[in-house]
Amino acid sequence: MIKIIRTSLLLIRIDFLIQRKYKLELITSILSKMSIYIIFLLLAIFTDYYTGMKFFYSKFILTGIVVDSILSSALYTPSLVFIQEYKTGRLDLKMILPLSIKELIYALTLKGMLWSVVENSIFIVCWFYFLIYTLEKNVVLSLHFIIVTILALYSCLELGFLCLGITLSLEIRGFNPMVLLIRTFFVIVSGIYFPLEILPTYLRVFSLISPYYYLANIIRGIKMNVSHLMIMIITAILYAIIGSFSLNTGIKNMIRKGLWQRWL
Amino acid sequence: MIRRKVIEVYNISKKFRKSPKLEPSVILGRGHWIVALINAIKEKNYEYVTVLNKVSLTAHENEILGIVGPNGAGKTTLFKILSGMLFPDEGYGNILGLDLVKDFQEIKRVVNIIGTCEWLTFYEDLSVKENLEFIQKIYTFSGIKPIRDVDSVLEILNLKERISEKVRKLSSGMRQKLALAKCLIIYTPVILLDEPFRGLDILSVKELKEIIKNTLSKEDNETILISSHKLSYIEDLCERILIMNKGRIISSISVEKIKEFSKKFMVVELEVYGIYSEILNKLKKIFGQSIVYVFSFKYPYTRIVFRVLLARKEYSISELLDKLSKYNIRYLYIEVEDPVLEDYFTYLIKTGIGEEEYEDYRESFSLSEN
Image (cartoon, rainbow over all chains, first blue to last red; front, side):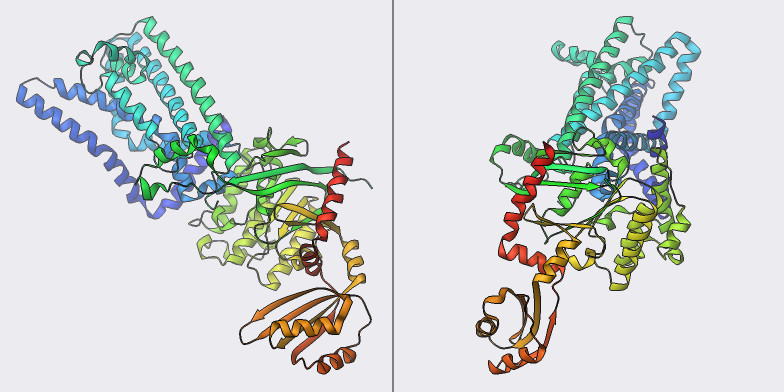
């Protein structure tokens, strides 16, 4: 674990050294990441203004955005970072280092996650605001808040590894649509941008397996049952098993076919 | 003295799939994943190319083993398999007891590979020092302590003046030298050098050879595998040389065997002007039964260089010149010399004698297996 953390920190340092001339790139990536969410938020503020609902929609959408931005980063990072390394040809460099491929993937993911903390800094500040707000109201709820956030992040990361495993197994060399499919499905069944009540019952059942649903609920101050927490833990374990299996299969496929080589 | 076996590989085969029939960009625009899915379903219909065909080899402790062969012989693929970056389709092997397939993650700790696309394996935007420090640190994280510091390594390689220069500004020769720095910084029992002398001038080749022989082999006691498509680069460096062609090791030769070969044969090289077939016939008449093979390069304006391998016979230069003038062959230069390893290699490939040797070579492995 320490080795992975140290490696990812070293890779971040290298990124800084490489990008010493291109600091603007980081600013533009933060702005592009935020732009779509800001449009969402502005629409909600306008709706509030015209319907006379005092910050009702704005709060609802803001909580949705916080959940979506934080969890989607975890979902996207493994595939995105790996494909980026492959496309820039730096995967060759890292393949010959004395790290196992799993360690390399974990280090790259951690690096990607740390970068996405910078990119999502505004939404993470919002998350802290919601945490402090809950802490003032109820200490137990705030403890739940932290546990649910960790579990949801972990679930999404494992789902990200599942997607990366599929990327490697199917030899997809561009963008992986699996990530988009999983994210869209979770966004629909979790009610983060619209109330769940408008969904048909057979779709609403799927919200139980969505980490987005639980994090959105806890941020909105809805108390969780023990059974809900248990379901969340069970799904997290399930995602971990599927993710690990998919990643192992993908890595073996990659080594068998030599997919990491740009020159093949 | 019996030396420990470091690398043992038996009957390794590898096939590569030919490029997909459906071109994503042509048929489906950006729909790479749809094509990937179709390809995965249709996997059975792919055509395959055999890159390695039942390759067996052993390398001993502190040995410098050379692997030579023409382009596409399978040298790089073999090195990738030995470094745990590719799985073989068939066969098995181990490096210091670590299985090539089961322990592919751990193999990277004992094997250091310098690849043919070494220029890819540096951060082009970082300086020489920053790149080497990165390698040093990443090995330290894995518990492999560096044996030399960056400055002393750069001094060995005569790159100290370029310490703060970015890698993208270095010439290909310097990059090749820098690649070797990775082996000098840390100790790994096995080093795989894939075409280390590619694109280097004679002086740089000599310099690198010195480093490989004296520093890596003698000082650090590392087992080194060197591949090259040019025999002259490695013949004075290696104790044993394996010759590869079309994915197979066709012969394993020692320095003694090359000496024996040069006792049996001799080479006459001459550059002439004329029609190829005519001169070839005349040469056949001059040398008669003693011709083993004729190797030729054709240049524009009917200029041809013939390299004739002959069964050793005492020819004096004057005797040869007389015969050439008798058959009216106008030559630019003529040279009588001992055959080099390159001639042995061409001899094996051209005459097909290597095939029989290959069977003997394989038999020796099946015996050692038992």
